Image 1 (cartoon, one colour):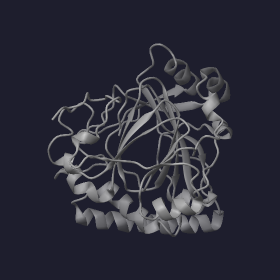
Image 2: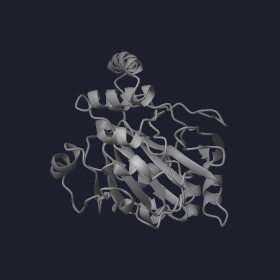
Image 3: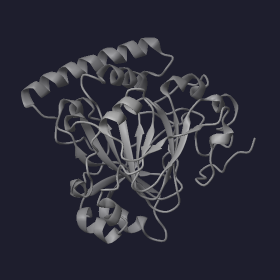
Length: 335
C-alpha cells in the first residue's frame, strides 16, 4: 500500500482506507430547515458551497496591509510549531507571545515563521451556551475583524460559543481529534483537506491506545505508517474546503486537517444549543479528560462537569450574560 508524504496536501487519502472514505456532500443555498433535518440531526458533515461567500474577509484578508491596520496592535499567543508535537503519545503544545501585526508581516513574507494562531478569538456569544462552552484557551482577541464576517443562519445567536481565527503557514497537519461542540469552519485564504470519522469509530481509530485531550495516537504527521493496519478500516469522509465554503463538523466527530501551500486563514464557529445538546456535550467533555477506557475517571469527570454546569447556570442567572473575557495563558505556556 503506498504511503503519502507526511504533510502532503495534494493527494487524496481516501483510497488508503478500506472501504475508501466517502466524499462529503457539497450543497448550495442550504436552508435552515434542510440543514437541521438532513445534516444536524443525523450528525452528517456537509460542505455548504456558498456558506461564506458574503464574508468581506474574502476580499480583505489576503492583504497583509489591511490585517495589520485593522488589528496589528493586538497581542497574540501563537503555537510554536518547532517546540510543539501533535503526536498522540507525546502530545504537547508550546506558545509564545507576538504582536498580531508581526505575525501578519512574517506570515506573508518569503520566509514565514513556524507560528500558528489557534483559536484567535474574534467574537463570543453572550448566552448561557457560551458560558457553558467557555474554554481556557490562549487566543488573540481580534474584535476588529468581526465586521468582515457574517453569522451563519443555522443556529440562533444565543447558541454561539465563540468564533475564532486560525492562521498560519502552509503544509501543516493537525492531530486526529474531536471537539465537544458543533462546528462550522470556513476558509478565507488557502485550502484545507479534512479527514472526518463518526464518533463511534473511536475503537478503530484508537486501536487499543489511550487518548489524551482527544488526540488520537498513531496519526502524527511524521509517522510513515499512520494509515496502515487497523486504522485504515475506519469508516469516514474526506473533503477539501476552499475560500467561500463552510464545512459542518458535528460535535464528537473525529477529524484531522491538512493545510495547503502558502498562508492559510480560516474561521470557525462553535455552537452549543441548550438544553438540546447539553447531554451530548457533557459526555464528550468527560471523555475528553478521562480517556475512552477509564470508566471510573469518566464518571468522576461527568460529575465534576455537572457541578460546574450548575454553578455556571446560577452565575448566569444573576449576570444574564457570559463572561466577556477569555483566560489568556502566559508567554511560553506549555501543555
